[in-house]
Image (cartoon, each protein chain N blue to C red):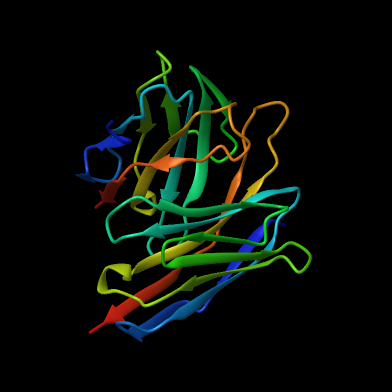
Length: 117
Length: 116
């Protein structure tokens, strides 16, 4: 069964500190892995997308890593800000279905990050 | 350019009623997706449109749920005989579709549906 597991479920850190969020997946056939940020009451917004051959990608203070062998990914946030408070969702995309053209996304439950002053 | 928009932002209805949720995708995006997100969970796939046709509706939970996209742009998700368990945030996303290996999906803000 295709699954995406994230840890921790929630995290509280002080402003300015770094943190790392974890994602393990059992999705096949694998196409790419994405990290989304979802603010309360808003839709998810993409932070990074990594394909099989990429093992790290940065977007400002966000750095994602991917180990396709162990099927693990992490999202590292540097010098956290209050505005980083949100849910961070790991999403793994399956290869495109030849019949429908759909590229199914398997979502994790997210890590709820709270950055406090 | 505008992103994906959804209306209404909030909908409260009574058990047994019929509701319609609307999604306006990004202009030019041929692919459109509906998801349902319950509290504390990640989004759950419902249906995928490529153009006007529902190419994959395997995520619809039962026949009370139906979606249309008659002109290949705006989509409406329709729920008949609503039940309390239908209460969730309904997210819409769109993407360029066939173009691009990553096929990035852009999400709307969602419609929060509450069934009393």
